[in-house]
Image 1 (spheres, rainbow, N blue to C red):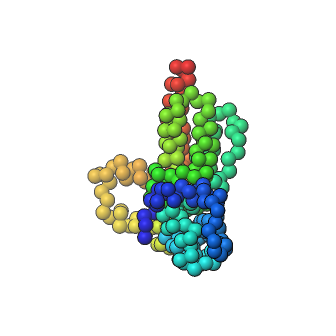
Image 2: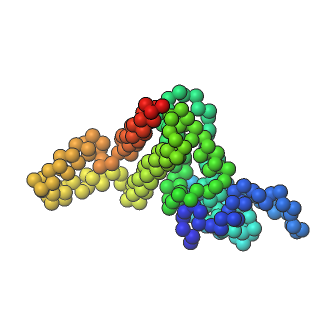
Length: 259
């Protein structure tokens, strides 16, 4: 099976499909296609939402669309190209309300929250190996254009604005991958994190010497008591996003002072 990463397919064919460039080309003689590329992408996204990315095979998508497996290749050349189309489709479906707040922190927070919601609605995005080669379709470009607007008025240079946005999205992506890994661990083990720690606590108490690991025991115990687990996604999100914004604020303040 091809790797689950964007940009792994044929670039020319992928770009043409992303922008539906073939729709204006005169159709060859023969039976009119009974489905559209949009039908295929919609079916693939729904399948991934319900069963995860591994379930998205050409055969499974063809079954959902209602065509023979080999017929699906008349719409998309392969799974790699289909993955790019899926990612771009969910990007295109994101809300892009006008930026009304005068506070860049609120705008950037909204960008982070919107992307967190995106990952929560489509958990399979966290399974995509890399988004460093994004699908250069209308969804990706509309998303990029909108999110760059959150930094208007900050005084950041163009390259800094791009890097700042990547910094924010990188934090969101990392959080989403961690949250998805935690969810899958709970699902596969049939116990939650609190139950897992409760089961392992007696053994840890016997083998861990507090005198040898004083910081780990003290701080780990405090964090566990406060969060009810070694990792609390909600706390990690709030703490991490605040630090991301504080870091950007230092750069924005520097640019503002320089005028």
